[in-house]
Length: 575
Image 1 (cartoon, rainbow, N blue to C red):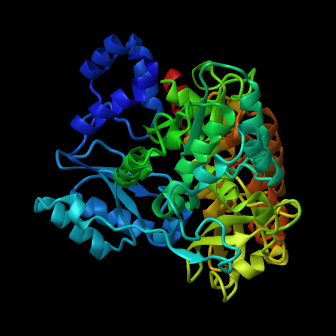
Image 2: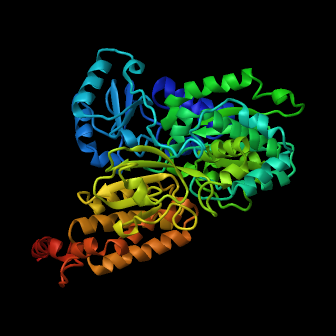
Image 3: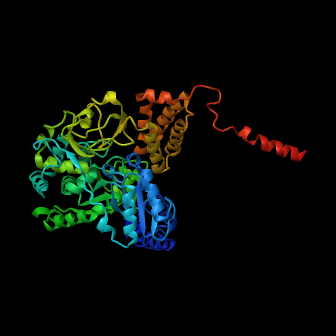
């Protein structure tokens, strides 16, 4: 037992008792040799850990912007009425209600997790029925939603990469025809980029890990997809999880790593039973374990590590901190993870989609992959589309596909699209004049999320939701990020109140630059992006929001006037 088991121990108590008591903290402290105050610090960092008793049924209602425009407020009110509880309070013996950020179900909003089981496409009528069934003692598993990712589009069969028929073990068998270096060379030649949002070359990362000689190395799969609007990794985990496993096994073969760890976000706990069942099948067929497929010394094991609700843990360095039993705060890095990563050992961190593509590249050949897409962005890409579209879901597209085509009648069938949010709140926003732009390295890369909003949606409502999200999810280590995202949130609220001046819009850009330049991790470096862009890309909208110039526009509250009468009374009394 060591500190890397801290999250697992906390989950044991959380699942059994609904919260983590002081007595539980003391027991964990003794068993792991970690101080009480450090454990309390870790508990307070994660959204899904509770230090106070909760009801038997913990309900997490997604409050992201897609949920908002699909009826979040009505669903929230109905939950409160039917349970007799208020959101974000302790609740009663039967229920506790909490708002939470994106749970990876944007194609089926409004959605909630009840004891980590999904309930989707909620309506007030549905909520009443769900709560009544719970009160009647029915088993949640019997009436939870049977979620399946809606795969709305794939290229022609000969051009589909991920969602073509899957044959277990095919990638591994193909990979064993080559040396470990040749496998890396194939990934490098394919120009496969990391598809978690950073777009770092996968082959370079694998090569760097291989070059660092050590007796222990790790392959970590980042399955903590928390960017609002993104649910592409869920689609892989539900439809072709074997590709993920084979990608990790091949990465282990290529780099010399013997152990793989999948950091799975708690929001996807309901997927775990099927994923572990498949893992057992891999072991039974000697695709995992000792001497894989009879190759002497080719050993590799995979296990799961469950996260606990923190957007910032999507950053590789923060994820490793979390796995090591600390708060998921991105550290100041002196080395890359491929040199000193998990437990200070060489570590490759790739996300689900990257590893799945690596598996297919070895199976189908790098030349096949290079024949698709564009010169700088070969292959295909998964895009999660949600919002004002007739067909929300997953789209496997060739790189080089335009946004206009994605929005069109042959694909998502968007209704009067006006504002597109690309790659989630931390990405880019584009207006209708840019719909001809293409998704590729040569033009505009997309991390995997596309949220579509029509002219009936209020841009400020969208950005208030985004900035509230960043304010809540900031780990708080960097002052510019902690304070700056709060300031930007208040600026958006000020514009909504009709008190905005041109100076406020200029302030937003200045604060945005400060946050981007001085924040430690990707959250702060990207959180102001879209708001800053929108001011320039939607000038007509923001010009309307600027209040007419007058001498009082900067005064929201005049302290001297407010206390004048009180001061007069005090002076008269003294006289």
